[in-house]
Length: 284
Image 1: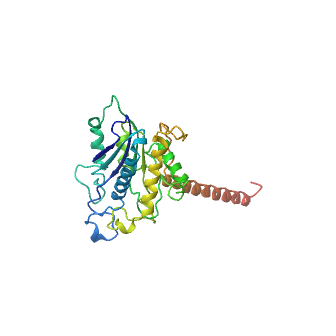
Image 2: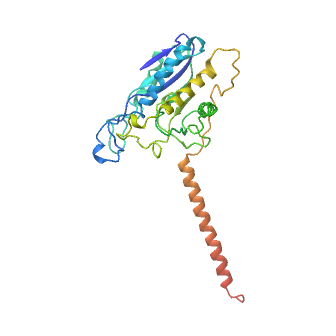
Image 3: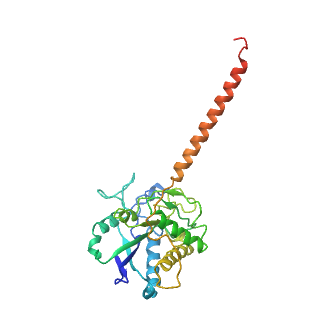
């Protein structure tokens, strides 16, 4: 589903979210619940809700904006196969892949070009804390983090976030050269929001504050970069073509543990060797 704002502008910014939810709650702790569908209040609906509000807010500012904005709502993001469920022949993120494969039908490449793509996924849950998603164009994601922190959202945009790579809808846009960033949380090992692909992903664990933080951060990003104002001296990371990767947090922790373990073994070996040498007869 695609809605275009300021269609006459040549520079296109894409804001995206998926609206489908997992058809089976395969991670639910109660075995009897695992054939039930996931309500998807956070995993799907939260990003869609923020996009709808952004469309309302930015429409009021459309005459001041120097860009065209696409609001894209993807289907078939969440039906890939895990150990218990998946639609036969489907991968994750089918909707975005299908859209990108036909993207030439939606714009005129001779007069229009893409500036960036921002994906919102699981942005409304309690205890919101975004990660450093590693497929994302780092200069774009870094700018979003910087804006969020400047707005005072320091716990939601931590200075040392978890880092890992997530298969999500932004990857299809990255594959055709569009700088893209995924605003997403740690959903696999998160005591603050532990309801991924369970029937508890419902409105009970949605935070109005989390939705507000996400929406205002993206709104400020648009205003900083695309408001036509000669007094706007904002210097961001445009054109977001710089990319750096950091090590996956869990891999880094594993390496540190291995190094520490090996260090202990070496120290024990050296100490034991010293004791052995002391026990030797000096005449030998």
